[in-house]
Structures are given as structure tokens and as C-alpha cells.
Length: 223
Length: 223
Image 1: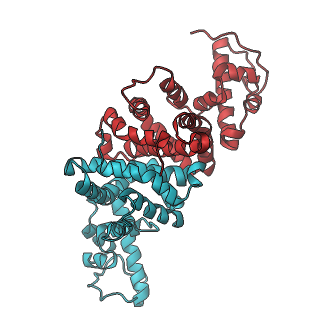
Image 2 (image 1 turned 180 degrees about the vertical axis):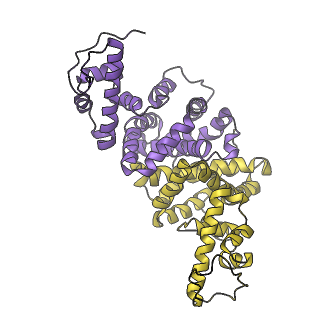
Image 3 (image 1 turned 90 degrees about the vertical axis):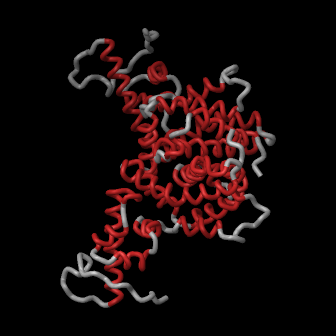
């Protein structure tokens, strides 16, 4: 795979300390690493919302256009900087794409089949453990993850609720948060606590059992 | 409140290192601390299931009857040793006592109102953070918490499912684990990640919204 032509790169902190000009491939990977390191520092210090691509680029000594060129939007830069084994937003977007759902299944079951399918093969236990460890050890890390989840994943789920709930936009964020409470609780009990009765069940059976919960949170009566 | 007469205490590691006989009150609290320290060590090393009151008593240099006298059953000793601000089993047992439920509410809503009522006032954020931090940092701690939760809380919930589910005993443990996935996910998102949309809602509204989920997991159709 060849990259498209690069926008200009600024001289700066990303240049090699020994002053040698590196070859294109080595230079790319050095620049990418500098961007990711700057991103981790900025996201960690300021949280997801307040960190900007402009500042991250300045810290890495490159042009903001180069950051966009390598990593696209802020949300994908975050996923790369946190070294998530999969991009949750790409998975969610693919799951919600027109025609992605077998109409015999409810939306909740469909989403859970996809999420569990990815989690079961990816190193989700390690990733989920790492994120929870950060969130439980540092208030700052918890805030960063909350902002990322709220601004990206939950806002897409809220969009779904908005389309389908009887009261529309009014409580879309609340509905999305209820969905998160069930989905994250499933990750916690199946992958971290490893409760036997949940570990032994197939992803498809779990999706069928829990799917209607998500459907009700998204579009059903809440009281 | 005066304690009932004590069973005999063995001489042993719990006696004061300076050899002085301490007064009854000081002696009690020293012995209690020795028992709790021995319990924490045994539970940590062996997990909840394999740690025995007999071994904990031996480590603390006291008679097993004294451990029972101070702490009752193994499950209450665990709660005391882990310094939980509330005893989840007492709360659950009280919630399930005959007449405890207002019959206008479903069982799931009733349980959630009680659980959220306790969590909202107790230092649940600190406690839940501490437990999650242990579970995500140490495989051993995760196993210990899983065994405790499975052997005590989940087995009581499984008992409920057994009474009410259409297929009775067959999948009671699975049903209880589904309940745990939602309840722990709510604790994670409301108290640890502190997602705004969940923090702002009253315990009663949350219980009404999530209660039907627990009812379905306990006794409804799962697919």
C-alpha cells in the first residue's frame, strides 16, 4: 500500500537528535511515533475534548495537515494513540451501514453480535483491562475515556435513539448511556471478571438474550 | 451493645509482642485485627472458595469458634476483611425478605431501588474503584472477587431465578450472571466513568428504566 503524497512537514522536535536525515520510510515511522506520543501526552493532560490536532501537531513539530494525512479525524488519532487493537468507531459505522443488518434480527441483537464477534477474537481482555486499570487509577484517565466515549460512540448511539425513540431527541443521550451500561457491564463480567456462566455462552446466544434490552433502551418505554 | 460470652481463645500470634496482658477491650480489637489480617492474606492467596475459617483462625492464633463468634459465616468475614462500607449480602437478604417489596413494583425495580439507594449514600465510588483496580491489576484478586460474588450474591440471585423462571433450575446461573452484567455495568458507568446522562438521573427513575431488564433476565424469555 503506498501513501498518497504528503503535505509539507515542519522542522521541529520530531527531527532526529543525531541530526542525520533519515530515509523516507524511517522518517515516516519516526514522524508517526512523534505524533502519537504528542497525542498521548495532550489527551492525557487535557482530556479528549480540549486536546486539538493543531496543538498535537505543534508538539510533534509537524504541520496539522500531516496529522490529518496520517490519522484522519481526531477520533481515529485517539484510537491509534491509545493503541486500541480495533477501531470501535469503524466497527460501529460498518454495523450501522445500510444493508448491514439481517432484518430478521432486532437492532440490539445485530449490534451485540458484531461487538461480541470482535471482542471475542481481538485481545479485548487485555485492552479492556488496560482501560479499566487507567480509569480506576487516575481521575484524569477516566475523564479522558468518558469524553472520548461520549463524544464518539455514545453520540452515534444517541443518533440511533433519536431516529427510533417515541420521544425523539429529548432523552437520546440517556438512552445511549443505558445501552453503554449494559454493553460495558457485559465486557466487565465476561472478559474481566470472567464469570463462568457468561464465558461459556456463545456470542450469538448472548446477543439474542441481551439484544431486546438494547432495543428497549433505544426505542421502548422507559417507565 | 455487649458481646455474648466469648469462646476460648488460644495463645498464639495474636498475643501482644510486649507480653503484657491487655485489657478486654484492647485485647478484643487486637484479636479482631489479627483475624482480619489473616483473612485478607488467606483470601488473597487462596481465593474465596479455598480459604477456610479453620486456617484463618490458625494463622491468627485463635480458636475457629472465636472467628465465628466475631464475624459469623465466611461471607461476613470476607466483607469485614475487605472493609466494604456495607454488607451486600445483608442488603440483598433484607430486600428479599417477605413483605419488603411494594407489590406495585416489579422485583427488578425493587432490587435496583435498594441497591442504588445504598450505593448513592455509601462511599460506593471509592469502594467500587478499589475493587475494580484490584481486579484489573491482579488475576488473583479478580478470581477472589469472582468466587465471592458467584458463591454468595449470584447464588442468591440464581435462587430467585430458579423460583420464577419458566425453565426453573436449568439456566438459573446464567440468568443471575445476566443480572450481574447489567447491575455492575450500571455501577461502572454511573460511579466510575461518571457518564453525565446516568449521574443526573434519580435512583428511582433509573430503577424504573432498568428494572424490567432484570425481570426479563430473571424470569422472561431469553430468546
